[in-house]
Length: 97
Image 1 (tube, rainbow, N blue to C red):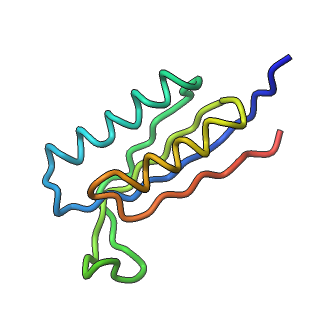
Image 2 (tube, rainbow, N blue to C red):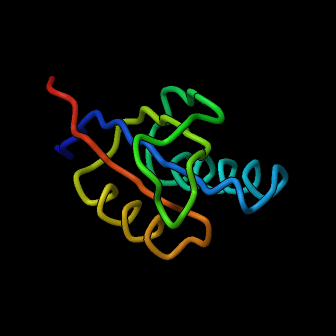
């Protein structure tokens, strides 16, 4: 039987992309999760002030995804966030059962 774990992923998107590109980026990751996992929720926190400047930016767009998947998918999700333009930070956490 396949192992299914619960995960939370937070992505921090640069506002320099523009509002339309931020929306497209959120949709891109939402679609990626839907294709490879079971998406439970998308919580768009919106524009928030950063705790410290990243690439001379002080504000960014935050999104929290909650999903269930096999243990292999989070590594692929992380790889894609690293190669996506405008992505400032991302973090994936495995939730305890």
